[in-house]
Image (cartoon, rainbow, N blue to C red; front, side):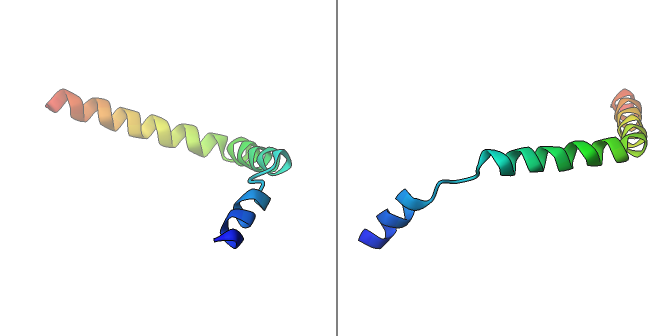
Amino acid sequence: MDHVTAFLKEEDGVGVVEIILILVVLISLVLIFKKQLTSLVKSILSKAVSQSNNV
């Protein structure tokens, strides 16, 4: 039991540097695929609107 509590106290979790790196990667992916993402979202929304009119 002491090993478990020691491990939990030692574990610091995700650091600020890791969070910043993940955000940089996500933002760069969005910027790279911006055109494809906007066309995909527009397509999905137009399908949702057209199918909601049928209901």
